[in-house]
Image (tube, rainbow, N blue to C red; front, side, top):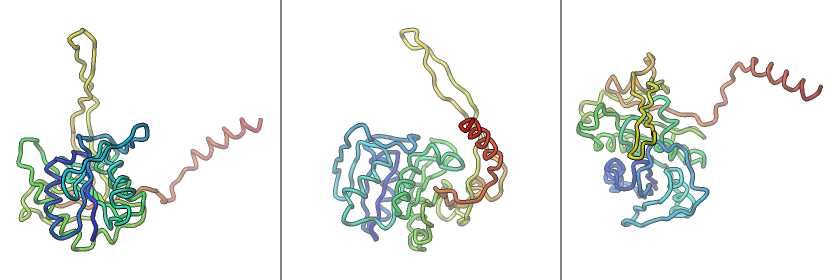
Length: 258
């Protein structure tokens, strides 16, 4: 099986390299990842500048662009004649739970693959403190188990699978749960500073304040010691009540016909 790996932490990050080490002995694995960290860059694309591709060693490339660029470089260039059967993005350094997925470059790489009808998985390691041991090997083994179980073969069109793994040893993981996207609460703090030339600048300094109560959420699953496996549908076809919007549009159209 041909696999393309990408991420947003960069080609030298321990997470993606742990994943490569776990998978490359069993599958034909290619890594294309940013040459520099691109965390929280969302679904950016480099449309206003050329991309550079640096071959670091066999089957491992650094790309000057964003995570989604890396996937496009894989599909349209490096693996153009050997298309991946699954794209896996990660292992991310930190959670991608709840609405984090809208900020995440890790998710964006998987989303780009799903847009091109390639089964896509994003994987993140969830830890509570940056100074604790990061058990990337646990998440890497979980992904190999998922592939062996054929998880990627059951990914609906225009859907990615978002996997969050608790930062535990494999023996401590309670299992896997099919979960739904939760909601994480952050404060709205902005920290103001003054630079050496007495000009004001700012840091976005929102603090995590917990998640909304929902026993089916990815947040709850991870807190309970489970691997959260969460489908993320990219094109929402669920019927919803938009009658209020429809009434507003009727009022707007009346102005055009007046």
